[in-house]
Length: 127
Image 1 (tube, one colour):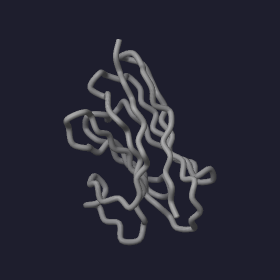
Image 2 (tube, rainbow, N blue to C red):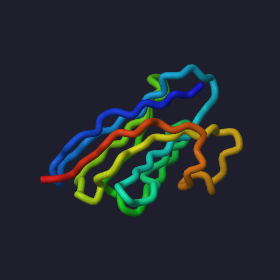
Image 3 (cartoon, rainbow, N blue to C red):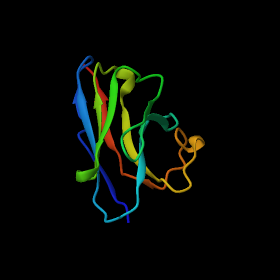
């Protein structure tokens, strides 16, 4: 079973940084790719970043490239999202999601078709 818990959200000024964490509190021997998504009020949920099960491959949404960095520590069952140079338009609820490696395709990577989702953590960028 996979249970994802996000943490690290909060209020930050424009240009500042935050580090989000996604921890899997469940027990599983399966391997999972992990994605971060965000949803601003009145907008659709959008892809932010992806990391494969081993950490050897990453992908980013165009709006966060060069500012956000995704990483993982499998020994700790944790995936992190380092967010730098934050902008007001980064304000949203951020969600992490896990997709079983078995059956995963490239079309899944930026879609919402992940198997498990966390409850989300609020990030607000404002002066």
